[in-house]
Image (cartoon, rainbow, N blue to C red; front, side, top):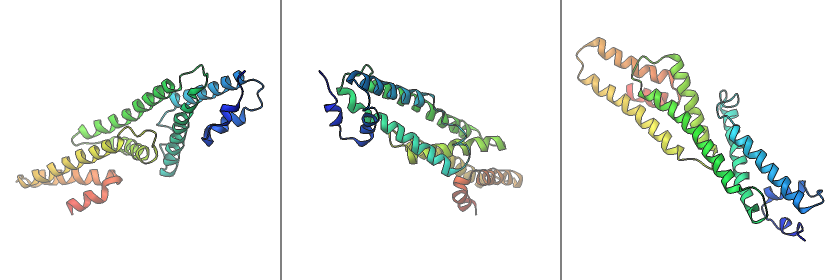
Length: 210
């Protein structure tokens, strides 16, 4: 007859919490079923979690805290794979993979929105800038707080910076070949508009044009 002995020998403190919380159950099978249900509940929450929400649309501190907690939940799911050696009716590896694929799709959608902004030339609206700042801020917080996993977001944010500053450099070089004061003024206005509306890069851009 199976007992709780092996479950009590688990060293990971976060997983022990599950076992200790359910130790009042009378049977081994009920304990395993409760564990399965808790993991499934966590997976459902992760699959349905929207990255763009009230917590991530406002202040930096709230946004960072949201991604920090999201990382903890993914870390918890990752650690739960230690329970696969027991007779669980669920495949925790598959569940984790599904959750990761879902998360990747959501963060890459945010990255795609930023890319579309970068593809535009000039005549950017206030809404364009607001969307860029919101989505880029989420990428930065994701990169900073998400360790399990990161999906190479660091490389993506570096690419965003490169594309943006390559565009500014192209505008700057075009000034050298311009003979029209009006055209030069328009180019400088485009650069200054980006500087004024994208606080993430304001200092660096101003340094280039001063």
